[in-house]
Length: 247
Image (cartoon, rainbow, N blue to C red; front, side):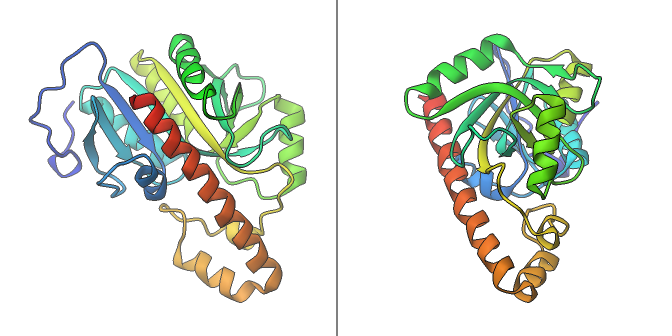
């Protein structure tokens, strides 16, 4: 299987070596915080010793990005980005290095590379607030505190995202190691206005979301300010983690 030329840049370079990492991030803003220069969703680009792709939000986009990276010859898959807290112990700016990826009740989910997870957690712990535990992947954003607390009680997961499980599934099918790194951008106590949660686009902010914010009134404006503030904290954590992992 070969990747379409329009989706792969610099494909002629040799990527041999002991490990060729394929990194997937959902949002261009996340990618920029990690030092990526090309943050166009859909493109596979060279990044450090491997390849990277900005997938866009959601499970389908994440799965497609992981499959494109397989076509580049990667030997490991990784997912870095932001996640919402399900555990009151996690605050915006904290870092979760998951030890298991869950997505359905009664299903064991996907394991992560234990050595890589432990190594990354140890590297980050000297400078960042790091936690381990399960990450739950959903199809749609969780907007309410009640929904987040209910999922936490049923699953035991510490945080929630939308991309890790489909990427882990692609890695499992290809028999490749997988690891995830998630910066917390949303505390479990936050109520996200549904008008915002339901209008998230592939790149995060969409025109529909902007309209919902403008028309939403003071409560929506306040919530948007808090979301932007905590997303910035999470981005700073991702930037620090990227520097530490590259040192």
